[in-house]
Amino acid sequence: MKLFPRWDDMQKYILNGFKPKKLENELIKEAKKFLPGRSFWWSGGVCIVKEPYGDYVWHYAVRMEQEKIWNYIEFQEGYTFGCNPVRPYRDENPYIEKSRFLSWDCGYILGLHKHLTSA
Image (cartoon, rainbow, N blue to C red; front, side, top):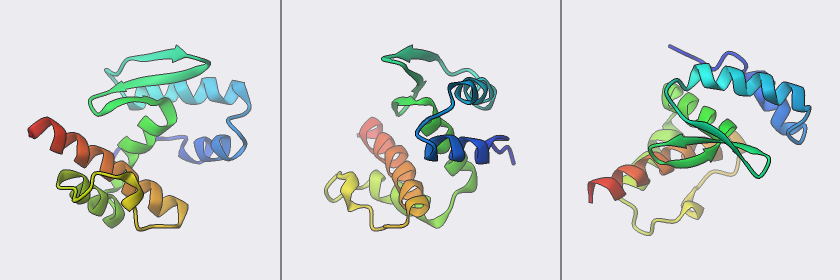
């Protein structure tokens, strides 16, 4: 199982208001290894990653890949909802706890992408 090797550092970086910049550069370098074959570019001072489901800030793309690997029940529920949404709204996320909320959200985005591209 491939895990993002600097996951804890990335979480601290996010909680610290996306600082320090030196750490951001190190994490992006690691993200490029973790997400091989993806396009990375800077736009408006933010590093963006081209993904099949859309263009996302680099740390969200890393989270998405990590959530796919972990495949928690929240992720699976979000994916199922996204694949066949009653109303395709992200605010249908039933979780309040941040980590569970984000896991569901990642699954939802992937499921919605599948739903929209298979329709």
